[in-house]
Length: 520
Image (cartoon, rainbow, N blue to C red; front, side):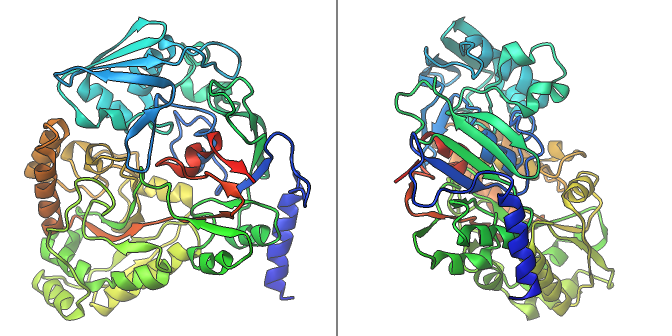
């Protein structure tokens, strides 16, 4: 055995010795125990305050929102059992479940909904706050089990925001009048969801148990779930191979390892469960810096990148070549835009025409493992072959967040979620009003085009039949301007035991899977 493999096995063993190991051949009580990887360890389990992926994966099974979404992003009942929309599309009435309770036994009511939306999220949530402030006139309690939302004008995407990571329902009796970020309950969360937190052993595992008072009879099927924390992707793969975990959540192992793992007995690869997120892998350009302000230079960079190589080699086929700002799987996507095939000659011509004088550009990869490192190496090589000097830099996750938020980059990888509608997840990267510091998921590049601003604003509030044409126009303008290098429509397949069923019954997959998941 090689020393490197020995270290990997030791890492896996150290982790798994800290908590219960999968029973071999012995059925677990009350529907069984699920062991899943979460990577990296969440900074918090209060998903109303922390929207990073690991927090959503765990806490989306503790907290809930008013709705769930199927693979076509059609709204389904959750804490709201039904809803009505007025004929003028400005008033939404939600009828709440009468038997839903918080995990501490307090009843869930309209007071919690009004507090969550009108008070908590209006002041804290980076995506929902601007929507509530710009679109919502008032949120009012009709009675204990009815809430009315009145809009300033019709806003078609409203019914798309009510998933756990966006419009989390927050217990008023715990958060009202407190400093939300300093509230001691942030890491011992009280939700309404199918699972309750039993223990969080930092650096080892997060243990969830069945909510015996859940409002849906027979749900959840599982008795308990351990989200295991393993810092190394290779060690996570080894833990799966040894039978010590059931589920490798999307992105928790290197994508080039998935074809090998898929050949193991009783192993399935699930590609569904990302419909709500539909990320586009991209390189954000800081348009304030030197040659990046020139459109011809940016167009040259697009032609210089071999995105088919990215798809086939770097991402092992688990991607599509992107054509612009919208993922091809989302509504309002159009491919009727300018195309940028890999063409080194064309790239050099455009770069020369731009007046580029050889200034070096700093490339900031994402610090998310070997696949992202390889992608950074590919992009660096492609751009240098086109005559552009690239300085590859490295940082950790905190450093990446800080540098993006402070605009301290020239080129930087990112893959923002699209959240089911361009008004929710796409516009934020391109509208002038979102050129703000402090977050890596806004208009960090500084792109500003009044026509793009106008089209995004008009499309957000337009009648349904007019929205496709408006979004088509904005895609055509953006792809001509190239404020961002769009590389691939991304997938993050989940590897799991085939006898674990129903892990991706909604558009957010593992982020709310434990209501329906079961073991056979």
